[in-house]
Length: 154
Image 1 (cartoon, one colour):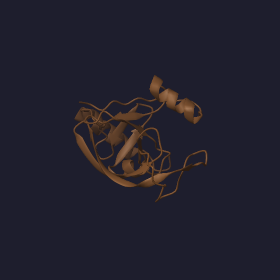
Image 2 (image 1 turned 45 degrees about the horizontal axis):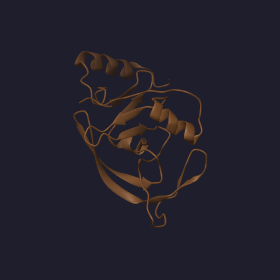
Image 3 (image 1 turned 90 degrees about the vertical axis):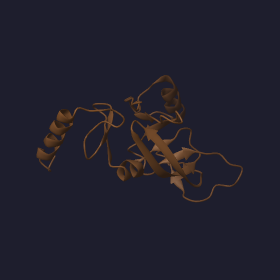
């Protein structure tokens, strides 16, 4: 089953507005895990990937900061498996006091994934095939050639 991607654009919102946007089909890119049916926010502004967690124990481990500067409590790590399209991703996530799972730049870099907001896709960097979708090899080849021939100064 292909991954479901959504692109939602707009200016910066409050945390509650962001959560409402997600529930209402707003302005963010998300991927859906085919096994758990969890929806993961693809956040190129996040340096690390996190899973929602609550605990009666005091927070320990990393100190994360939200974009607005507030501290996000964390409780260590969890190895987690995602199934998106034909790919299986095994990754170590930070357990944090967040509302939704987040795929950050660490996840994108580890699995060589690119985000294309204009086309509303997450792409495999080596083939330029959309994640979770079969792309025609001619189209992927054309895109790869175009990227390789683009001057580095852009």
